Image (cartoon, rainbow, N blue to C red; front, side, top):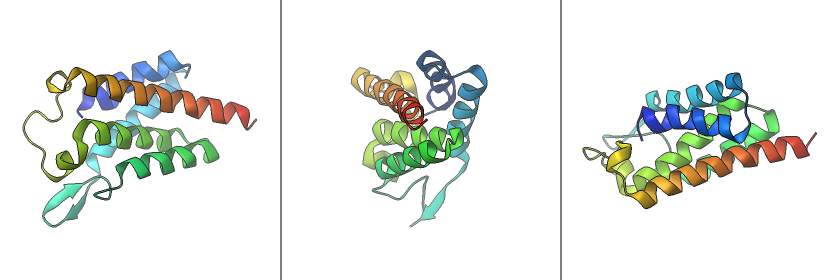
Amino acid sequence: MNREVHHDFTLRWALETGFSLTEAQTIADANWACDRVHTDLLGKRFHWPVFGSMLVARLRLRDAVRDRDLVALGEALHAVQDSIGHGFWGHVYHWPGIDRWGQRGVSVRARIESRSRHMLAEYLRRVRSSG
């Protein structure tokens, strides 16, 4: 997904979930920063292991809660947003328009927003319950 999702929407969703402006900015900045980190594999560039972006999302969320690390939370959000928005073949080949929010289907956009909001709320719930 593009900056609109990885930064701007994430910032808004974090604020609406209950994060402070500073916290939300940290989360959104970390999410956006993931777009600059890639691994080359067989001539293709990947953020995450080929079959592992959902696993990365779960593990980074776990780390974020354990360490109260908002950067890890931003990375978890990036992984889940890409997994839903790109799907497996999107990681293999980035076709023109794959990152444009308006060119994704309504159901894909709804799933990205729903999962992102859920992950933000889950982080807050776990952190608050662990004292």
